[in-house]
Length: 159
Image (tube, rainbow, N blue to C red):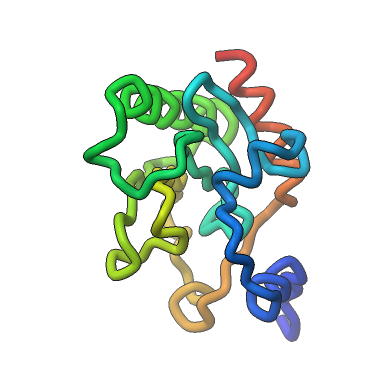
């Protein structure tokens, strides 16, 4: 193979970085443009715009806080309930062999958005870490974000 096209990555690499919190801004948009697949009372589920695998979602409370330990109990409970629902929706849609689930709390822990707590749910398949990721730090996704958003929104609606 001589070329691998991943044009959606260019914006991430060269684009201006906004000071705006994506977890505060995206819920104000419509679901499709905000990449939101489900909204709850205290939190929501959205696609990662620069995913590790197809179906990689982030679960966040509407409240802008970095403090997971200080999140009020109803919001914390919904954060976990939405994470569980994400596992079910991704499982029905993609049938992964496993998942990575977790939160990076603080910049030194790897948080790209350190001031708004969020959980990552990353579906995994045997062999999904291949030479592209290991050597080139490139991910190959088999479908567009728009298709993933539509599929997962439909899966959430049927839960």
